[in-house]
Length: 435
Ligand code: HSE
Image (cartoon, rainbow, N blue to C red; front, side, top):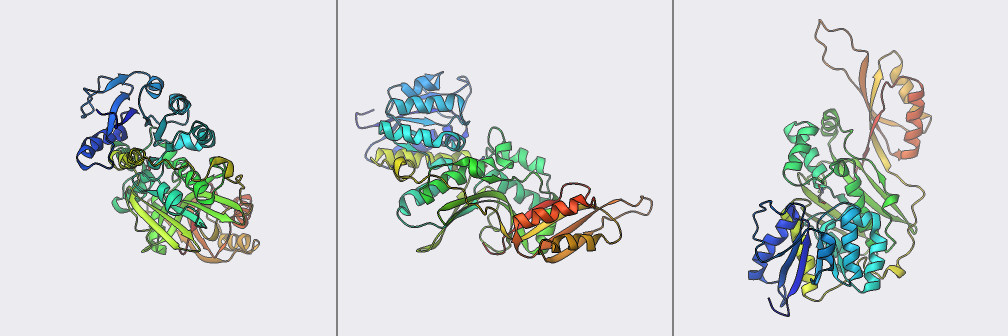
């Protein structure tokens, strides 16, 4: 160790933490800066576990807060969770004026503004490239490369677990549960995978990117969120028939000084870059009047890919680069204003479990027409019924609308439901004809 080294302490030795250690051991050879990044302390729950990395010369801390206050230049938080000890340790490090590197999007979504203000007050860098889209340099691109350039929208596939599940369900015909279990085994999923499948992880990442892109204060509570739990194999099959693939998209758009932030499953045209983004790969598309579209794709989850982003932040610090956490000083960010007319404008796919009866199609079309919605397709899916089986009362009808607003569709669907034709909640998927 030399006086010129950048010393770090890592709290959390899961797949990302051990990935960082493995890369740093190789980094000694490659060298990202004239300062060497040296691991000085670690903290994790179980000291006795063999993690396949050498920790002989590294100080062990049972308490991550003590590690955050210890004699290291950078505290690396890889514990996870939106509060608790992760928050306590990050606050302790910033209070002590230390640089913090974190992969924790839930923490940033919940406490981002307060942490950014604390970091700026202490003149301590707070870097978090790993928090958004795993190994893709999405934060850097928006915060540094596009700094000062107007951005109209940021959108994409930002959750590896969901994209993996949807891809496997479609390609391999596996169940949702089996695909989720495999995503957990591969280290893609969050400790609590409901964050992934219910869309919150994407919402956290979207809110962070959106704040930097549109230079507003960070507000993750303003994201309209819907996950992939309701997607059935018949939706994937119907999407294929219609020429689409279903993807969980995060979409943030700047509209007249306000921001529309949404996360929901979306049918995207087969052949488009988003539709062809399969498995754990993430894709982030940034659009603006001056540059058109900038598209980034890469591994969105997984220990080593996410560790790459952590090491990239550490190398920036070793090089003496310390950008403002949200690009601009917190005091210069505009207040977050949620767009009034929020939601998808376009075509919709609606799966309706209905009680079959004469005149049902006419009733559905009339309810849609009452809201000015025209139907492009209306298809009744009659399940195969062996001779000896009794007639099933429940049938599935699939509607594809022409472009309309979410609000109009919602009103039409409540009319249909009031008519008691629909026996369970309709399932709606937005269709993005061009993305
Ligand atoms: N659980 C996250 C995902 C990890 O699946 O994308 C990366 O943030």
